[in-house]
Length: 342
Image (cartoon, rainbow, N blue to C red; front, side):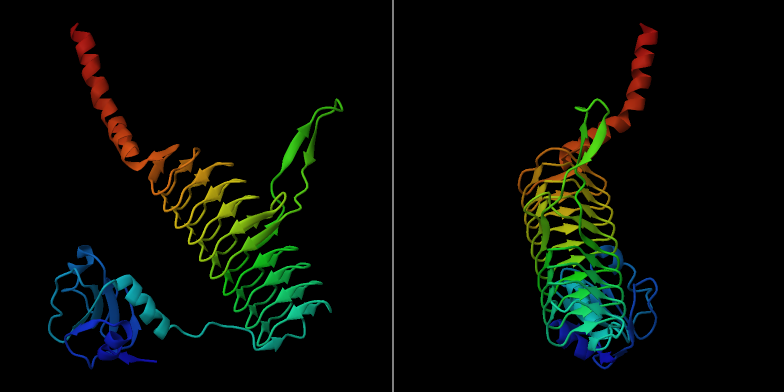
């Protein structure tokens, strides 16, 4: 459905500068936009590109001073990124989904319970004792093992696997290939018999994922050795993330791609973890923390701190260390000269 600039301004609660009758056909980045496109400007860096952009309109943060120009419009909002999310939803094509009901190829145990208005795609397998809430969508090839439960309004994409006795809250999305409840990585070396062997420690716990979470493609969350691995409400976890057994994430934890969280670690509410970071086992990360991408956290982290580095530490300290390291070659030259003169 197409919208005018006036309609979009009303949609996002913004102030329109320029014509309100421009029809917006699509959304695009400012460098690639063409006539009829809407773009967004969230910083001065992009504001400099507006004059040369072919976009017909832009969402712009209220703190940026800019004029629309002839035949173009600006929609002034508190936060251009959040406003763009609203517009993207209005322009988004429908997400493919299986029709309501159960596909003939799906295998559903007699003791499983399926809620109202569900969509069960081809080749899904639902084992005994499973409980699925209302308005749940299972795309092709989803497998849910015994006695697990999936809350209302969830969407599980192709090849998602939920192992036995795991719990998924309401309105949670599991993307393609996400695996919930695999065995935790627990082994010990037994040398008592004289011939050393590796003994597997049984992993008899579960996984509990809260409501309104999003788990990325090919992410794995291990079941606990006992009790549960816990993911709080509103957590957003990117692709290719590993969460070890007995970890506990608070609410609104956001983890970027390729992060590894080793077993029995805890992460407090509202913490942000940058991509490709590593978090050691049995440590505690406080609430509202920020971990820069590529960091290795090996010590407990107090509430509200920002850390970076390998190993990670307070960001300001790490930046000073980095600057000092960069100066070392020049310092060594000076030291060598002094020694030579002496």
